[in-house]
Length: 594
Image (cartoon, rainbow, N blue to C red; front, side, top):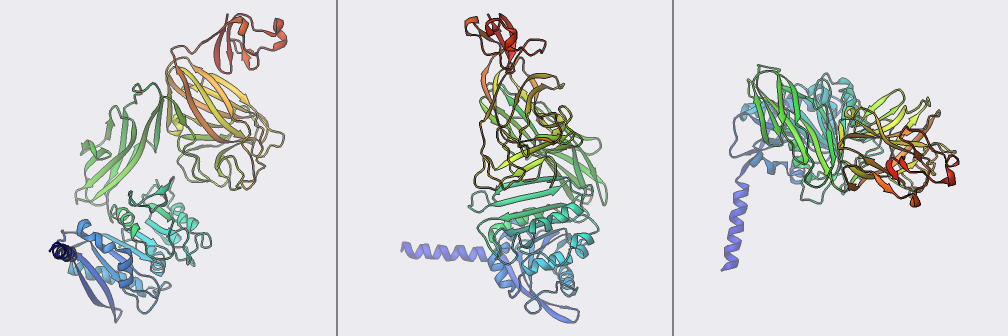
């Protein structure tokens, strides 16, 4: 009896799930020829719902596509209409306008049958269906709000050159796609060209991104944003996949597309100017962070700006109906804050902008190189300079000059290293710095004793050039410094093998709690360089003075010793080669010899 009841319950549940939407095969005439599409609609369709279009792969059909991508299973909760178009024969017209006209006619047909919002039409596809998207993208920007091709590009064309306005584009493809080989077809560079065309200035890469947080499925999500006219370009390159529609990507695809609308108002956060980090090294429970001012601009394309709302995550901070559009996040807590600004115009259309602020603290150890994960970029929170050009973290990748290098030899001391050069050889003109406000990072250190462990190599200096490590206050005044000379030269090639050599240790005192910067300077010789592969800051003790008392009988070595005027003390100047009673600076720390 139990078995019969359970079977009946499953059958009832299945019937309920099927009844959540309706499926229909629809024929329309396009350019005098009958074309077919399979349409799914939720049983309850709100007014002005989005339309989602899908084009399948070569030698395939809508039945295979919707059975694989399972996008239609989302419509009951997400409330949109989805239509799977059928090709005329086995292929799509990726060189002409026949199938572009089919897509346009399909939009018209859906608008005549259902209450869809023509400003919220999205287009995804697979393989050759994605080739069709790239082929048509420039001509469809006034009809499609966002494009989400998967596992395919139109490799014989450069569609970005024909786009008349910024595009909202997400390409999803497996690293191991055997048809559109990732390296063979230059997938990354192909998608990046859209971003370069739209003059995006911000770049981020999330390694190990999971579209479904509880799933095993992951990949790398890259985003290009910040263009002066808007638009976003994303690339999701995933693992454990090949050339087939992947249903685990459907949430990412929908969540990307649904954010966009034609003629939507634009809002941009102008302050903070990008992702920002506040680091506070302090005893547990003592770290506090400054209030964060959020400023934004908002413009309506049609109608007027009605409201501008400021959020910390999903918590509303402020709602405004007139300029200036500014709000304050008061006393932010430890953690990651996603600041969001949402504009709504008089037509009910919305636009959104976001910015991340990290409030971090530690009473022990902090890895300052934790963002050394993406080749070519300047890491978030850092800035670099070669004596002429400053580069801030969070921008687009570079192919030359100061940047993050990725090392590929199996015998390597680290995977990524920050390369800094000083072609002109001027004093302290080539550097890498953490904690500079220009780079949108701030480092607050509680009074105490600290140790800094670094792994520094030369990039292409067979005779080695030194590196000066300096702790500076917020005014740029030196608090402590030391000099290291690397004993490993990589040899100017990221494919070379190299060891890490001895890790450099720098111990220093912070006399009073405040904001400080950490700088690594190249030597003051032409073409001096270094590669920073590790940088860990550790608290030794929190104390109000940081002054160490040493008995005369236990006086430390004079190596690296200075008097309070900054004059170096040589061993030859001292009787019996021992320091006399007094106060000295040794390895950046105040030492009292009694």
